[in-house]
Length: 356
Image (cartoon, rainbow, N blue to C red; front, side, top):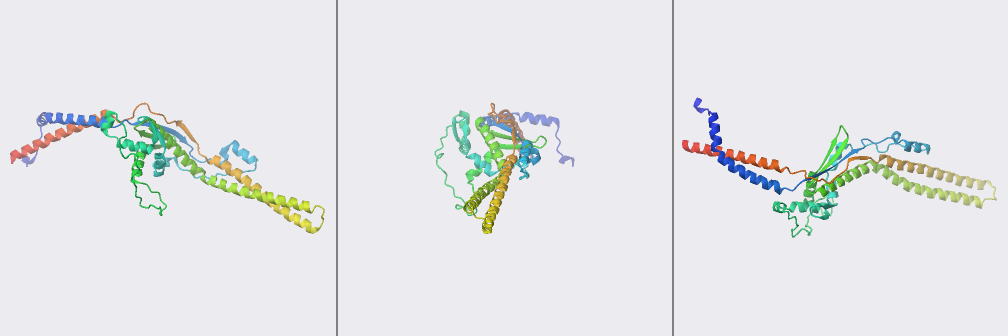
């Protein structure tokens, strides 16, 4: 039973390390060379971030201060028309959506590395075509022969019978690349939203951070004010119609009075009373709709969210990564492990052959 046990003494470990020093050295040097090539072939990454403090809840009529008092004096009651809001912890989902990526990919950006203005999707495609040798030599010229030719795309639903969003494989890849580089975090304790963008170009990183914030604020503003804006547009139409009806009723009443000024018959008075009733009704409707329109305008202002910028996007001065020293050390450690494993396998195979 004792013969089946494998005993490892400290001397055996020391002898194994001595025997494996050559293989460890060789694989460590190879790992270092591979690590150096890999570390320096990766482009520098620049991080730009913007920090904002959004409005956490929709305000009520009592929180409007002087504006609410002014509306009260005018006989307008202000009620919260859009009390439902998007929770700030859902903001990261907004900036990870396909519509967000597709809109940003169309935006023009200035590249410090390329010294030109180009759409973001063109910049990302050009970055993806760059080879490690081009980055090491600093030659970033776009020599791709088909860079200006649009790719032929076969959509699953060319006539869009499904009425659904269709994207090409290239757009899907670029959208995934973009959303990986945009990170949004929400701090529940402080209520602060931070948008971080990592790009190989410092100016592009700052530009994408600004565009991401603009998309988020426009999205939230549209969500908060869409209902009251639709109501405002409807009331504008109704006010215009009631105004024409009011003016027509007023004109008919005065015209009837001018024509029957010298008549004192009961029939004339009945006609005047009927026209006056129509005039008063049109006037009342017009005044009510006008008050509702002013109320809707105030609601639009009330429901517009406020984003207080704590830290604006800045063009980074120093790269954020990659951490080349750690990559090289990791490659050397991997080489040492491979060298030890190589020696262990060789020793085991040699002992097996001797026993056989």
